[in-house]
Length: 483
Image (cartoon, rainbow, N blue to C red):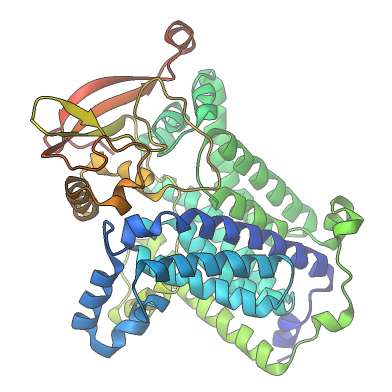
């Protein structure tokens, strides 16, 4: 009992660090909700690609009264487009409350519930590792908001360890030759889902620099995570190395808020002695001992949350590493808790695409003259400069990256998307930069596949284009992109 009391006791050295962590988490939450707000109607609204009302109706028919807790979302109350907007707007509002430390615990609980609701409603469009990461971070932050205890810090360290180490381990377990052969960065900048112009410059770097970058990546993901559990100077090194890597990724990639969230998790590897030296005095709060007090109910809740988080994440990690399935008696509760954002495994870029295939969707009224639909951010015209959009994530543009691989899970939503374009659904066409059939609808649709590649310096000087492309054929008749 003494050991448990020590774990749940106040971490006096992290009061300021925890306070700053929550303020910055509020900004990431705000960015995530704001990014989603303008997309939800087109993605899962009543006239969207995958209406959430259809999802919940199917769940109710298949699961009966248990559907509401198996698919956790406030949209069981109402599935209208206004309800989607309201959840995103409420998320922005509670983010501001958390930013200014107003009703902090209430704000943290509300933010977790709101993002979980949209995560469930978003289906494939919100089924990404950064969504899991934000949910689990937000869940743990509920307990950090009450008091920075040693136990909750341990849970955050375990989360950061899993995120980093499993991402590195997955690269080895996949058997991808580009990682073992140190050539992954020869392809990454060009083939990632949504590159910005920094990727073009990185792609021009010498071979030895790119290989060194792969070595650095594997070192930071496979070795450095173990420093998280060592004395403070090792933790500082782990934080520094991880932050440097995340900044390099931001400088060359559009990966929404996941890199910012990873940097934020590194903050908890530091202590108040470090944070107080870099945080301006006018921004530092006045923290008193009474703010760290907590009652037995709060401590008991934290212990229960810790047991659940460690059990689910431990079993999930074991499954990933061993390649063995859990028995049904464990697999069912683990899968259920993961739907609540708890205990996921992380495996960022375990395999590397070596070619970039892009779909260009065109419509026609007569089958002779074809006009392209222009997406806002994904590569289209070879003349267009790739934009920097962090921390925004255009979910439709991102999902289009998966379609050329002919993945079965992409078929349903992509076919629904094409149907909505043929219908001229306003909520869906609003997700695009340009609709060539504004006020009307096409009679025919087709998707053409092109292989895209960055130009080199000489070619860009001559043409001004960051991209070049080669026609491959009509989707889905073109062989799938591999891997």
